[in-house]
Amino acid sequence: MARRAPIAAGGVIMGSKQLRLTMAQALSRWMAAQSVEIDGQVVPYFAGVWAIFGHGNVAGMGEALAGMGNTLPTYRAHNEQGMAHAAIAFAKASRRQRAMACTTSIGPGATNMVTAAALAHVNRLPALFLPGDVYASRRPDPVLQQIEDFADATVSANDCFRPVSRYFDRITRPEQILDALPRAMAVLTDPALCGPVTLCLCQDVQAEAYDYPESFFAPKTWRQRRVRADEGELASLVAAIRAAKAPLIVAGGGVLYSQAEAVLADLAAETGIPVAETQAGKGSLAWDHPQALGSIGVTGTSAANRAAENADLVIGVGTRLQDFTTGSRTLFAGRRLFQLNVAVHDLAKQAAEPVLGDARATLTALRGSLDGWQVPQGWRDANDAAVAEWNKAWDAATAPGNALPSDAQVIGAVWRQASDDATVVCAAGGLPGELHKLWRSHRPGGYHVEYGFSCMGYEVAGGLGVKMADPARDVYVMVGDGSYLMLNSELATSVMLGLKITIVLLDNRGYGCINRLQQGTGGRPFNNLLADSAHETLPDIDFAGHARSLGATAEKIDGIAGLDAALARAAASDKSYVIVIDTDPMITTQAGGHWWDVAVPEVSDRAEVRAARAVYENKLTGESE
Image (cartoon, rainbow, N blue to C red; front, side, top):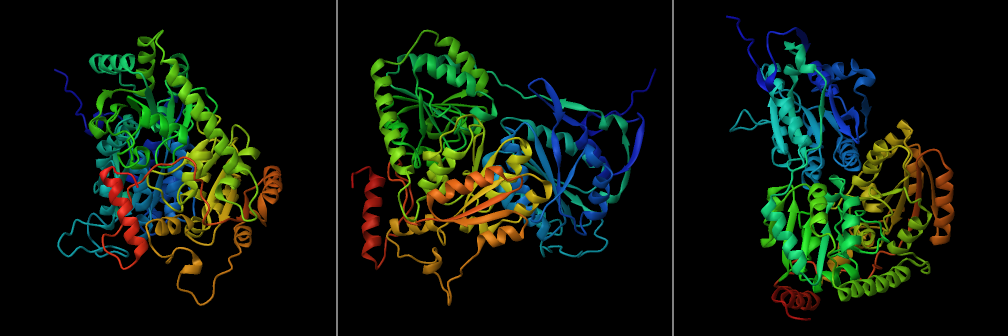
């Protein structure tokens, strides 16, 4: 009787032809063999590897990646967090269908990526982190940069990645990747589990050789999984919609990741159900779609928030119901709520009725089940009137006029200059709130704002990642002076790679957003604006000069008219372009918006804080101010 070849981890048949490779070489070769099918075309899943080498990865991963050439491109960055942000932005711009990997040395190189891993985890975006780790053999313990835990010798700095990774593993033997890599890929490509994967690569193991089965490196194509909704859950949703007088759809990021925007647009047009958008879901409908209400929640339009307050049925599609979306759980209170999502974790939030399923597949089925049904004309008329009222507020907020422009006026200027296919990128501070309200998306992918983690420093690197995902796309990065100072080094990388981004740097001389929040909760201006911080001399920062020193073209301008002219010059430039404009730190768009739960101190010697606390307590109890 013939003897069966033993099967190793990952379903690899042992006993077949083998290749003797180091673990790092095998890992690199395996990554290059993974593909994904997008719109009928098979393309590499990993678009490349970002790498900053040190003693913990240069000999192993560095040598292996050098041997891959263009089969698996390697990109050099200037900051580990920055390169990880670029990788994450690439994945978001690719609608989670493709990803990039990041490799670092141990110690600070690795821990610099932890913030980015948290960002990817919160936003449920795929990225493969490959930090170097301590010696598995412990032969040279403690190796340079090693963290020594006095109570647990198995702990390294990379354990910081555990709570911010969807899947975490430490490779202590070269054959372990036979099992770990397929598991990692399953997480990266799963619509519900999707998020960052961390594989810690022990330094000595990277360089150790093993006889890997040749079949392990066979090309593999991954396809997007579309979970169909349970018939009973779908039927309950259909019945609820047919019985509703004022239904509302809240479109989250899951709409875009599922490529469900077209069927959502058709469903809304055919039924008249209005659609509001979260930060991640913005762009699910074109801004001028008849049923588009714009953004919802704390940074929402008056039209969307009024609809939420008057709705008798709210249907969340691909949203995790973050507090900005729900107005800290007040906006949908008392409304019947359904959650359509691929993630079980999100289904029962706020006592929602669940519909587990892929957004595109489920909305397609829903559209068929609602054939011929429409919302009452009164609900349609009310929302049309609310949108018309909001459009007037938009015109007023974005119109030029102030000597020192507001964020809204700068946004209006950039939007008027940008093409319909351009993408705006932002992350933290007051700009994301103003953009959520005011940016008018023409198409999916035109709005790229990281607001799940609201991470300062994401913007410039994120813009680079978006440009890498689609080099033909115009990318406008809008960033405040605080975020720019926090992390700007990948501007130099964009110049080095020939990937042009246009950066509009709004200088309000400090952390203007938090300064407004500080005063809004009764606090005195303190440690946010530069003028309110400890200083002997206020810094006069030459942002344009700094950007030029990184290789970009840059200029500082005055006013909206100057911005319009500078944007035209930037459009004609063939390399990254930075425009610096002074803005007013105190002006924000008053139209729209909703309450947000920010706790105010119960005890204070300031009358302003005590007054703010009284307002806060009234909000908590549902009383009016």
